[in-house]
Length: 79
Image (cartoon, rainbow, N blue to C red):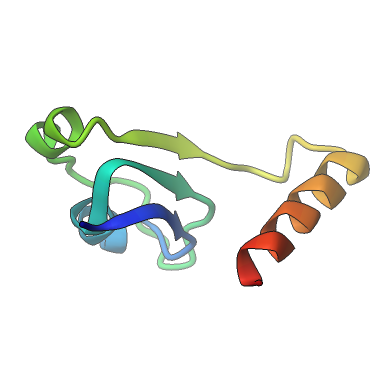
């Protein structure tokens, strides 16, 4: 089946593995790059055949209220 949502805070070195682990209509959120790797190849076939959604998240451009909403939403995933 695969994952519905993968949150990648490692960076480009894990990007391909994150894509590979996604299931049909899975979503990949790239949140950070602690590995310092800012580039990666993408499996276009997987992107199309699995109908994946890839998006980036950055807290730098968000105000305190928007960051609080994100933290609240992330708490619901822990339950």
